[in-house]
Image 1 (cartoon, one colour):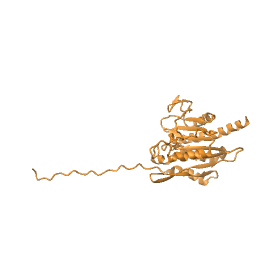
Image 2 (cartoon, rainbow, N blue to C red):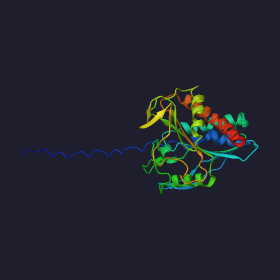
Image 3 (cartoon, one colour):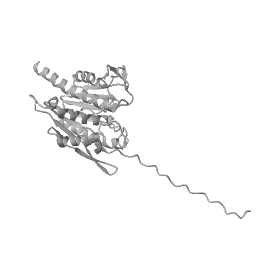
Length: 278
């Protein structure tokens, strides 16, 4: 037996894992807010409120009212960042709005509804899913209780859009592509839009994209529950989802989106004029 005292085990300090730094939504929307403050056409009109982990969120919405046209006003909803780790679409809406400010005639006869941040908590956390851990873009018109989905469904139903456009960035694609659904003319809008966007990025010409058959970067099937109009609408809108290759330059993605959106406005107005003369 020794005279030395027994060594007591040392207590290791508890190291707390720091929470990931949240991205600020106001920084993402700052330029759109500034445009709206200075514009005669762009109005900031947030809608709906929900709560996540004790924090309140309001869904951002901006409305661009173009010069009056000759017929009924055409209502188009443009949605971005339903996946929180895809802010490219929100930035593209800022670029698109700035282009329309310089040349409002592009939006003649249109009322454009911009939804730049459909998944605020996912953007803050830089995750595809919402903070609830859910892919919101698989829940539309499936009796979802997720507040973001319910609020967006109400917008789609209430405004009865003539067209719905969703903006996404795909980290598995090397080129531009898009999905079409709804009205028959959707593909006739997507093709020239992709062609115009090719000034900035190549097109994805694979025969299969995301597990669906594709032709020249156009996919006519899509996943269930994506953001779209309800199937029982009496007059279905055209529905287009634009996808940029996320690994490409951010600047090129933004410019490609903006060019595609401007082309869709021009082409849709042209197709409507032809239809009225038939």
